[in-house]
Image (cartoon, rainbow, N blue to C red):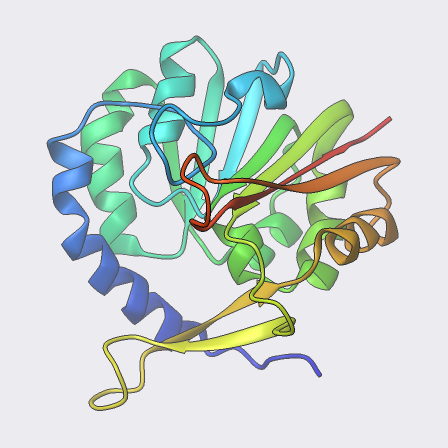
Length: 220
C-alpha cells in the first residue's frame, strides 16, 4: 500500500518544528555527522570528494553550511518556508543555498546534477523510496554518491509509518516515515538503478541504545 500525502499538513508540521529549532539555527555552529550521537561514526568521507552536494530535507542547515565552508557548492531543499527563511539568513552568507520545495516535485522539475546527494534524518526517511530513489539516481553525476542516515526500523514494523504532531488531539498535522530492514533498503536502491548499494546499522556508542541506519549507493 502506498501512503497518500497531504503536503499542506506536512508543511504545517515542519513549520512548527522550524520554530522550535530556531535556536539550533541561530545559536549553534556548523557541524557534520551522520548519527544522533556526538563524535560517533563516519564523517563526510562517505560523500567521496564532491564538488557539489544536495541535501534533501536539510532542516537546520548546519551540515550543509559545514560543507559550504569546505568550498563545496552546497544546496539544500526543505519543505518548510519558515526553516528555509531562517537557514538562508543564518547560513546563506557562508555560501550555502536553500530552496523551499517538496523534494519529489523539486527533483522532477529541476535538472541540475550533483556529485553527492545526502539525507541525515531527512527526506530519505520521510519519502517513499520507490518514488524518491529513482529521482535521486537521475540527479547524480557519474561516480556520484547517495548517502542517507536515520533510525533503524522497529522489528516487524516496515513500510510507511504514520506520525501525528503533538499527540492525538488538535489539528491533524501528520507525516509519514519509511522503515525497512537494511536488506530491503538495498533492494530499493538497486531497483532504482544504483550499481553499488550497502546499508548497515551502526551500533550506538552505548550498548542497548538506538543505533543508526546508514545507506550508501554509488552511480558507476
